[in-house]
Image (tube, rainbow, N blue to C red):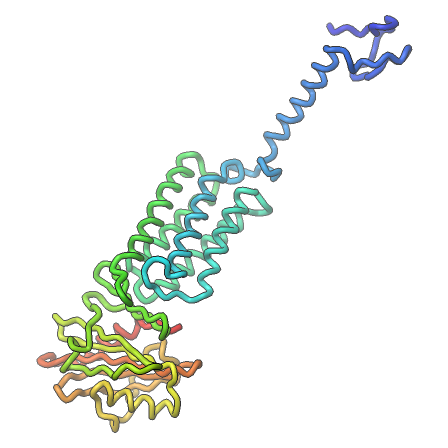
Length: 354
């Protein structure tokens, strides 16, 4: 039993917690026993606060808020690899400027998890679902390309780490897997990053940053020089405002070219007929009723293309809202009996203009 006598006047009993003798007024703060009791009360209060709060003062609501570091690291890694992709630091992909929002979003979500601000876990879940959707949207031209699969896998791993109550195994397995697919994504970005082309294995992505085009080629197709296209398909002469790129599948005797002129000028029909003639076709050919690639716009024109060497195919042309005139041609060279229309559809589906 602790003593309840006043060490000065002997008054007893003294109620617990009293800081001075009620009879003589002698203070008890200097007594070692009193100091030990006060320290124990403070330590218990601190222990209780440590259990209920994070380092930065947020309330603990589960495993995510209690152990945010591995999860936040995956988000920060995501911000880094998206910056490398959108900024063109690695490879030569051409992504829309709004994709920088993914970089900012990953940074803010990771910081929110560490600081445990507001509904950080819920926001992280919504953010990763959004990022997964955006990654899929950017992969629409070639959804199975390795670089796209790696970026979508990273978003899926990050989402799995903030769903439910991730234990130590899921947290650190997610950190390793998320880091691994992010590294793979950067490697795929860098593969074949020669002038204007990024290879993802069998496929190639042709990019013209100055002219604002991106063309994901079908399997087996690759970039070709004007000399390799000749004599089956001609390329217009490069100008100060216009340029293009040739491509094809030599083994299948299919050839194509894309041309962009930043200053189309004049009427769309006249500009398209001039381009058709430059590609080796007949400028007097009437427009076709075949559907044009979506990237060329709703008012695009389609023509049947027949070259002097007997190659047959299609030519699509359109003028964008900013005035650029864009033309794309694909032909099948003899002795191919097909017109190259199916090849034109496959190539046109991979065209994106920014």
